[in-house]
Amino acid sequence: MLRYFTAGESHGKGNLAFVDSFPAGLFINKSAIDKELRRRQSGYGRGGRQKIETDEVEILTGVWHDVTIGSPITLWVKNRDFKINSMPDLEAPRPGHGDLAGLMKYHAGIRPILERSSARATTATVAAGALAKLLLEEFDIHVAAYVVAIGGLTLEPLFPNTEKAGQKNRGAIGYSLAEIFEKRDQSELFSLRGDLEDEARRLIDHCAEIGTTLGGEIEIRADGVPFGLGTHSQWDLKLDGRLSQAIMAVQAIKGVEIGLGFDAAGKFGQEVHDPIEYNAEHIVGSEICVADSESVADSQSFGFSRPTNNAGGIEAGMTNSEPIVVRAAMKPIATLKNPLPSVNLRTLQPSQASYERSDVCAVPAASVVLEAVVALEIASALTEKFGGDSLEEMKERFKGQKGL
Image 1 (cartoon, rainbow, N blue to C red):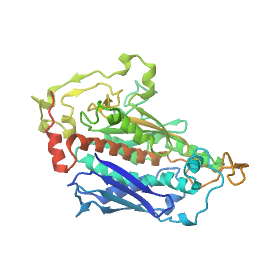
Image 2: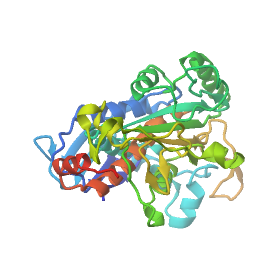
Image 3: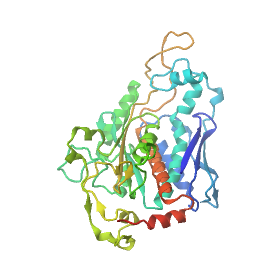
Image 4: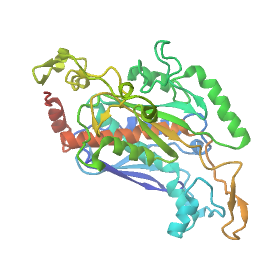
């Protein structure tokens, strides 16, 4: 099973990702990893730390002549703002952070807790996710995350026609991933609603002026995913459960929806479940006819399709060849310039919470992190199904899948 671990502190020497069981034979484009690290540092509403750091990955192990060799891969992102040993502890825990809970658990002060729980640690996650995306691209699987709300301002993707105006366009129906990438990458908010960009920026600027912060919602879509990633057989192997855990583990994420999500609870069954259709256009017998299809990914549907995708591409813990669609809710960042009440731990008297340099709105940056963790879970499930020793072996098994 492809898995990863991270290590590092916000103001320590750097952040490290350790990726295990990654297949051999993949050329690693370092610039592609660095591009994702730069995207994580951008987005409207970020704080001063991003002016200090210029994140760049160093690949320490697991490659030979820039090609993976099947052994563990170590990715290192150095911190320029290395000063942890000179930084004081905090006296008043910040509501919404792990300060107080971590202090009571480890009895080591607040500083060690905030240094590890800081979102700065996601540099390692994004580096590992960029590695996973390089693997997925070999199978024509692509993942895109984009912002669909900032605070109470919806940035919902528009439907191509006006018939469904006002409805949630889950999965950005009507847009290809190429169109999503183009629109998103032109936006400072990483959204698909350039027409609302100015309004969103004004909202963020207002929050900066009054010393508060903003959360939002992020959608992640993965195209080209074949049948059968994940399994129904055990609770901890279901792909929807694994994706939910990975997303909820990202700092400040407080909710996850797959497909129709919570909206499904208020509808009738006929309105929720996706009818099954069949078209043998790309199938010859039980073999995949890649030559007759637009891409390898298209052929992985074996002729089956759905007119809707309310399930978000996953049924009973397994992919059903439709795009995976996941949404995440991010709370406002807990470090406030206008702090909430707290308690001074030295005197046990009422006090304002301590303040650490922070962002006003990190929802665009969080979308990059969520894109990374979704890519990592899909890549892990892909190596489980098709064998993860070498890229060549995986491709042969991927192409050799049979339908009915």
